[in-house]
Image (tube, rainbow, N blue to C red; front, side, top):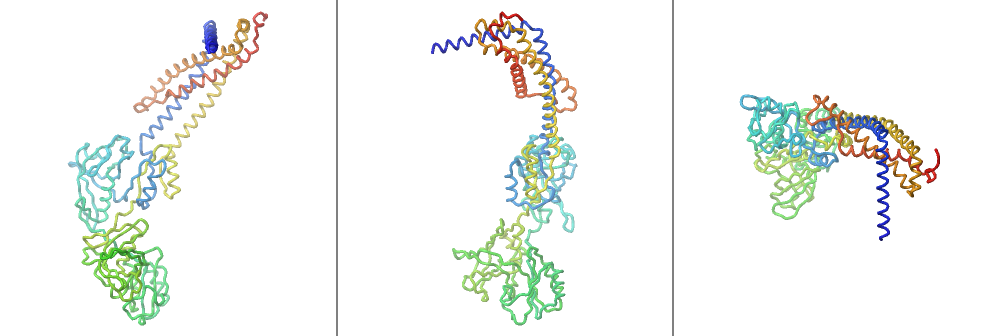
Length: 612
């Protein structure tokens, strides 16, 4: 082990001798060494300047885009229904940082009033994580609060955060009606955020504004209006006549009602009319649409077409699967609910609001009469409501349920939107309509285009600032190419000059190197001499070039100071890039010394006494 330490100590002493020799050689030949360093610095300084301009300019442009969150936004071109499930899918997309649904454009207009000033504004839904607010350090509005844009605040006479503004919403129902509420200003966006007159509010408040504009009441804000009663829709109509209808009348019936398909019904069909003499009504016709339901206007049009034909017109819907849970029993019954036609259909419940009775459902006599809960589902929409079970002798199967056309017509709306049962009015009300769009922000500039393509593949066309972002990426690529070409030629020439200088130095000092060999220095240690000299010269050249870079960068940034915002510079290099540049310079110097090192391998002790 002692021998090993001795060997290591000897190696360190020899290494120290080699370093001293390299330093002494450069000090002795300081004029050529300084000239060589200056020539390398003259190449490095412009390269660092080009790299600094590339990095500073691209970084500044990217920061300007990033500072404006509007550049991260993807705006849908068309208004498409957006249900909760679809909204959850959008939030789960990679690269998406924030999504909030929006209402219809007409449902977002309001008027702001403060003292004697007023201005129209568009309400924008927001929530925690909204880049438009978080970027500028603005608080997110809570219930009863609002955030104003700089333009909206200016039009209201420089309203300040903490003050209260009056929000006025209007609608037209034969006459202009208005409703108002006060909101506290939670914050005001700076002028650079947006130049539009916008107000950011929680999503529930904007939904209430849209609800009021639809003519409905908003109990949470004390705004009067109608109940959102569900208006029945029908898949078709059944026409009963004593004689079959002529073809031209059938064609006219289909044309004017909107039920494009017509076919005759056979006896025993579910559309039979219990309690009536079927022999007197042999003509049975079903006019329907597979996916185009019609409202009550289609019934009126059918009766107008068939005037004078002694025809009975009855609405019809495809049977739907329901579950009945009698209040007096623990079990449940699953069956098919279809339209009951005849005198029993003339019941009091028609979903007009303030109903006196529950909807009736007729079942077989084997089941108990009384109240029960009816539940049905269509995709993600489910409704549960109380009904009154009644017996019908014409029904023989336990899973055959019949009810009024009004109830089946209302339940048909589940195909389009949610429905809710209102116990106070004993009526079925329309649930919250699907949102018409969304505000979506990507996580970064690099995510904007991938997110846009993902949405496009899902059938959602969006506008974005992808073109402007692509210009900066293209500029970065082009500047990198220019820097690469300049670097190849500049550093290539500098490396060749350094290599030739080191090679010439070996030729000049061949006798000296031979003397070192005579003194017992191995050839391997001699090889370090040109490399150490090259690294020393490269370090000195890099220091000189770096000093020139900082001087010129300061001049450039001063010239562009008027076009730059605070803390913006157009020529700069971070420490990581400087370290990479220095490392590349050292690698180039080491490679340039290989020729001289190879030449040293031919030096022998005899060269010390050989005449040259």
